[in-house]
Length: 247
Length: 247
DNA sequence: CGGCTTTTTGATGTCCGTCAATCAGTGTGG
DNA sequence: CCACACTGATTGACGGACATCAAAAAGCCG
Image 1 (cartoon, rainbow over the protein chains, first blue to last red):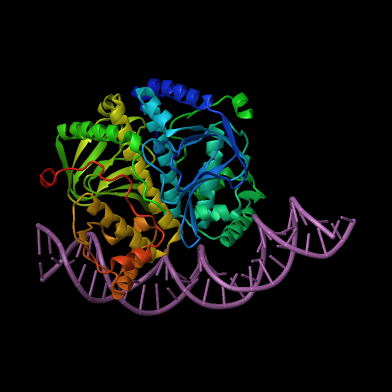
Image 2: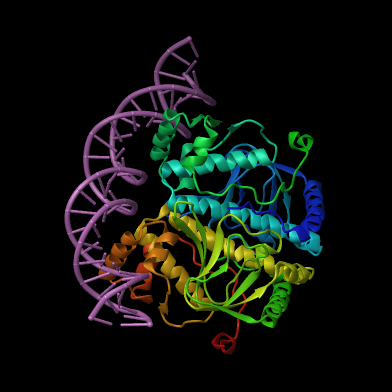
């Protein structure tokens, strides 16, 4: 099990493309959204791509009976909605703020324009590939792990993403998701999330209390999610200086 | 819940891009693989993009303890591995033939070259978006449906994809996947797949016998997978003439 | 016919869902 | 300042969907 990285022959183009893409994003105004704000709605006519700057959000799909599946969790520095450049919205697909967020938008049209530059196109492809990798990883967890393993994989995954983007340096972070949201992400019920978190606390694996995650036993967590490949596709996607993040 | 389609402003470019991409694929020789052949292995140094021509394949991720998750099912006319243009392999990710397959390859380098054409780049983005949409749909099924609903969603999804590509015209098709593979896709056990299929047969919803699927009650199936959005992102990705398919 | 894979079925246990009540934290207004 | 409402988290009791173990039956192939 080897960590997949960028194809060497493309790395220079990818860096340039990233620069151009980021520049385009940063030229857009910073939007904000309160908790539970729908950032991209299911029937959005002109969905845009988003670069998250602060706060957490999630992609979700709601079923008619009120049940909901959360497909992906988005953290600062994540880019999402790149496929909106060519595909319309639809499918009950939403992007919702988990807490107070700020983000920048890039319209589908602007993105299409930018993609005329092959370097940007490659970078966009890489970003979509990374997102897919993340989803694949989560799908594997949902498919083959029990509640404990799924939670371990989730907490580890967020931890690694935050660390990779240098948003944290210690095994402790803020996870602004209610247990109900976690349940919708993990494919179990809120009640079972609560019970399982208690068990993991008793095992002294990890503390999750009121949206604060404290990893007590990193190796133990890794064992609990054993077999899930580490989350390091590509070294540092869309890195931003801390200054910018602090905006 | 509206069916997402292509963004109007890009549809012409997408058609051109599709043409160019298909042309490049068709210039490559037709490879074949027997059942269980590993088409792209986990530690492939130079993974390529693939266009499937005949037969079924699947993307899978194996855990060290022998368990396995199947992330996506690939049918003729599907394109996969486009992200290999920029990301290396890795992560225990494999593409395996489910039965005798034939397919064409496009090397990462050739794909990068092609993507210098913005129309191709847009088309590639669209293809990745469609694949993601498919995975999202499946993830929602896994996250929120019981075994019966998951099977219904799977059988319906394949049915719709085959129909959309005009590979079938009646609600009957060949599904060359063992129940063990289905189980690894659905996140349940082989034994439970068997039992659930029996129940669905008794309900006269669908017959699945030795890799032949006969849908008896299409509306009933839809109800069983109720809430899963239909699978019609973009009208006809990479259509091929029946002649070509019959090769 | 043997040897293999794949499917089926039964018996038994367990993880997780459901229902329901309680509790803690937060904010509101009298 | 304290009742009140509201949301989110916790816990218990119970049942059901699914896993596990094991064996046999059914296809498939040389």
